[in-house]
Length: 164
Image 1 (cartoon, rainbow, N blue to C red):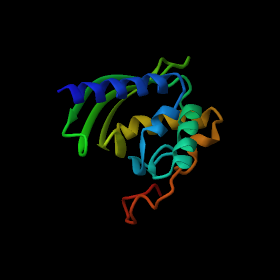
Image 2: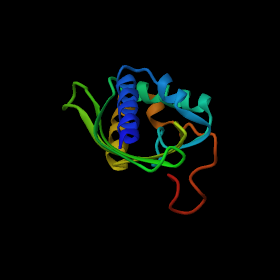
Image 3: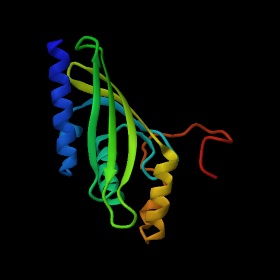
Image 4: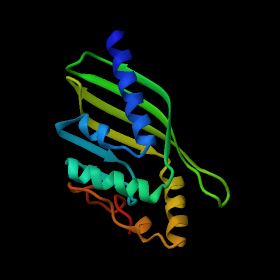
């Protein structure tokens, strides 16, 4: 029980840093061999496994979603330090002048081993994300239509697996 509370507090501190535009604490918490998968055929989708690629991804995320804020709504921490599973429900918000803020629900599943994250899988409403990015592209933000930043082949080949 105490271990779960410590992990949750650290996780909330990392999201507080992310809300300030500081992603370095998140990168520092990654294991040497990690995988970060963000679902969706969008500039923020993809599969990453290096700190350099993750840093480039965070920089893009902050450019595409100016003023980005995460509200941690629920955290579940399960398992021992050598095999910890973390489930997080977040609200992802971006303030903007036209029509009110962008909001999306985000679910993350993480695995941690001895205090270092080995796997993150992020799910959100990809249709809502696509609509926001299309709006940003229409405003002249060319990166809103860019291919994902990824360092591993993703998604798998198939007729329904990539944007056409």
